[in-house]
Length: 224
Image 1 (cartoon, rainbow, N blue to C red):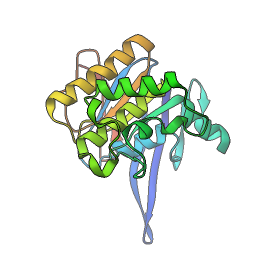
Image 2: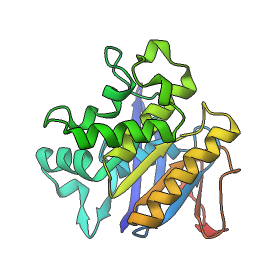
Image 3: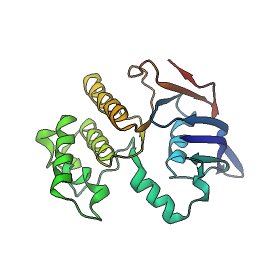
């Protein structure tokens, strides 16, 4: 369970401060599939980064299994991100000097990659339609192909949480459906908690949790 309690986030802008999130309260039950919707500039991505301990709230707290992320040491936060969270970033965050297979394996490069892990990574790339692109570097891949590598990298970690920022923004509708089918399979089989920021409501299904942000404020959460 992730619980967001009275979270505010603002940034300095000259002599003033810009409020991005204002008193946000919401929760994400374990194993749920949630969408955070809202117009550009509503604070969706900011909230996602706070949930993944990539940034800190200006005020309020975020709890994971009743443990405040703000109470974690720097090392504990790093372990939380590395071991429990799979990130799918809007800008992909691929390493230019590594090919698609190596980029998928990046979370494990420091500790070593077994033959079994490499086989799983290759299988994931096959599932997202990159069977013949495994050994291409990011500069040789389209934006949509780079996004699929980023998705495979997040899924390979078998994380407790997947945080996805516009995961289908660079994909056609067919590939987008394949990606969400993969994420939903992960949710069903492993009770992974998936939180997706998107403008695209085509991939919402019944029983998904839908949270809407407007001007940094959370509207009433709902289920389709």
